[in-house]
Image: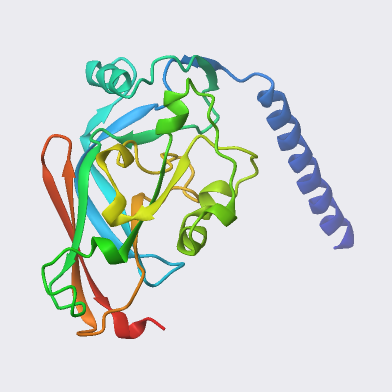
Length: 256
């Protein structure tokens, strides 16, 4: 019995060593392709979904849903048009086919983001009025990196960011690098302009620990003083003037 167990251990060990050797050899035989643009794919933005953020109960994540038929890749005319629109035409990097790199962004940038409630939030914010002055907009974008000729990298600095950004978005910068292509967007929603709403989100859909579908978040800086149960509506206007809305019921009594 002991000999049988020992043989099984030896066989498993040899199998593990063999797999490791094959993997190491394969790592030296990786095929590459020439990427002319940083963004590797664009998807049509057709729907948004709102969910409560896991790190901060006063924060709502806005996730983009897309039509599987509306994907634009290298070789597609619309993909080339979108790359030219963003100035993303001189990347010229070799990318490994097996690297898992899949930088994907929405095909539509935004003109505006609005948020409101179906109930009175407080005396200054009756039902249906804008909550932009009590909501913080959180996201990131490679816009500056691309505009700089792919030179302007961002070094994470928690001291320069809001506490809620550090709580809910900083993990985008926690994966073993000194600098990142995406620069943070951390402003009150009332201060956001269309220039801030270009290429939103980390874009790395092949890395679920970084990308979970959201392309921005909205964090309330205060709780309501009136009704505590609200249907929060987020309304985005795309550059094509399409209006897309999402809704979420929030019970602020549940928030400590």
